[in-house]
Length: 197
Image (cartoon, rainbow, N blue to C red):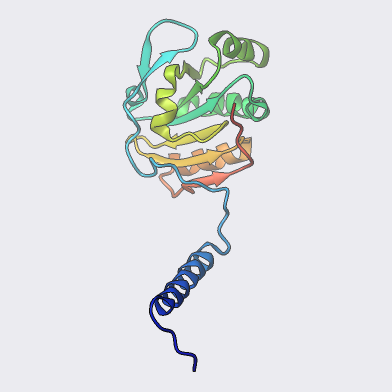
C-alpha cells in the first residue's frame, strides 16, 4: 500500500471527495430535462408590481385580477416564437373568457410602437389585457430568462406553472382545464428554446 505524507495525503482525500460530490450530482440529474428551470415564484404569490398599459395611459397590477386564474405571457415583436404562439393565445383567451380566466400579455424589451404594430398585424383580443414592461421591472420580478415565457397563476394569486418557449392550444387547454378543476399542473414545462435580444 502506497503511503502519502504531508499535504499529498490531504490532496488525495480532497480529490476523492470531489469525485463523490460530482457523482452524486450526476446521478441526481440523470433523466432530468436540463432545459427546465422552475420559476423562482413557484408556489409563491404573484408580485404586486405596477404594469403600464401598452395601448393606453395608466397602469394595472396582476393582483387586480384576484379571484381569477391569470395567464401572463411575456413576448416581444422581435421574438419569432412569440409569433408562432400568438394565435393559440388569442383562441384560448376567447375560449376561457367566461370561465374566470384572464390573459395578460406583457411586451418585454420592445419598443411600444413595434409591440403595437405586432398586434395590429397578428390580431388582438378584447379578452387580453396588454401591458409593457418599462425598465424590465416585471420580468425581473418573475425571473424571466428569455422569450416567450408564460406563467399560470391560480385564483388565490399563487404562481403554479411556468412554460419556457412557445405555448400551443393543447398545452394551454390542458393546463387551464386542470386549474379550473383545481387539479395539479406541472410547475415547469419547456416547449423549446427561449430567445434573448
